Amino acid sequence: MMTFQRKTRMFVGALALSVTATGWSAERRVESETTFMAEYQTGSDIDFWSVGLGVQPNDQPGSFGGIFYSKMTLNDEQSFEGTSLGERETTIDSFGVRGFSVSGTGDSPYGADMRIALSETKTQGYSRTGVEIGANFYGPLSGRLTWFCGATLRPEFLSFDWNSDVITEIGVNVGVDYRPIPGVGLFAKYYYENMLTDDLDSWNLGSGALIGLNLVF
Image (tube, rainbow, N blue to C red):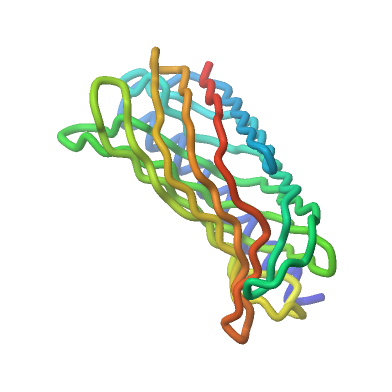
């Protein structure tokens, strides 16, 4: 119980510090305005949605920095070391801090999407609550079209429940993003969600192609 309380206090403190730092940085660099973020992704076996409240610097239209909540649902055939476990539902809920700018700043054309959150993963016979960290990196292709790739990690040492036999959960993705206007992003990607056990065995939770929409307004 003491370990859980201590880690919770550490996370809440880091979350508050990150939110404060995000707002302070935006205010120091250039005038910013309050903004909302909404995102939806869907595929044959995966659905994802997210909402957020934060700031958008005036010199970076379409960018976002603030708090967010997201939920991912996977209804896919799971497998363990190549052996099918049948179709199972997995849910991943996350609440934390997110900041992204697809087009980059200054002399660099590369953008980034950084996240730190408290998350809860549930699937048949397994659950995990703890801290997750994630990042996507964006590079220009042509005009308003960019490519991106990244990963999200939910390691055991950042978990509040230590009774699992999983070293880490990991989600990886790669895709392309098109911005017809700065505050609207249309994208397509491939996503893969997996767990690595203490015996270095692979537990696949789901994968597939998705299309999505990101709005900053």
